[in-house]
Image 1: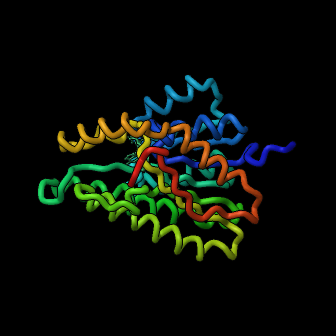
Image 2 (image 1 turned 90 degrees about the vertical axis):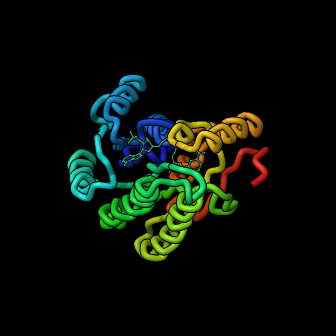
Length: 248
Ligand SMILES: NC(=O)c1ccc[n+]([C@@H]2O[C@H](COP(=O)([O-])OP(=O)(O)OC[C@H]3O[C@@H](n4cnc5c(N)ncnc54)[C@H](OP(=O)(O)O)[C@@H]3O)[C@@H](O)[C@H]2O)c1
């Protein structure tokens, strides 16, 4: 049987930990060539070493995706290395602060800049290539969009923006036979929660993670792989994946 992702060129942002790192491993496992993007280049290089793959299979790129110049350089490097772009996994994202009145203005900006501005700009740069390759764009939103809980106003807003952005892009790309998939993960046990500065909120998340048996990063990587591996005519537009025991 032919492998649908063999030698396909896929870019994954936020590849230095969690869902992104697990996705890199899963993609390499099925023969894809991957561009691994994050600010912590040492983590990307360690991942490459750990997975035992050569420079022809993975291109680690240090990039702060919020920076327009760095994003442009990333895209140039990726195309020079890969020759084309079959997939873009917009996974990099973060949450900061807690209740709005207790959240620093810099935290608002970093969430909006990373979760929606950088994602939109990178997609803008990748769109001509995705159209040419009849490729797949996958955007990582969050199941919080369906739950809307206090303490996550701007994070939820940024992830709702990702969902709206995805649906518009689906309409812009479908005539080119390029797919757009939005994934809404529930709670995943990653470093994501390390960045939460509100100690009370962090503690309650830690407790919840255990009590509901949170998803593992590999669970989401499998879903990403599944969406990417479908025949070209099949577009899984929206996928919500929660831990079985997560009520909201
Ligand atoms: N964990 C959950 O429960 C959960 C639930 C729903 C949705 N999500 C979403 O899933 C995605 C992945 O999160 P995760 O759980 O895997 O968390 P994670 O382990 O903290 O990974 C976040 C990744 O984003 C990268 N990143 C952050 N800012 C960046 C920037 N400016 N430029 C480039 N890379 C940047 C980080 O790399 P560097 O720091 O090295 O740059 C890291 O690799 C995020 O979009 C998150 O919102 C997570």
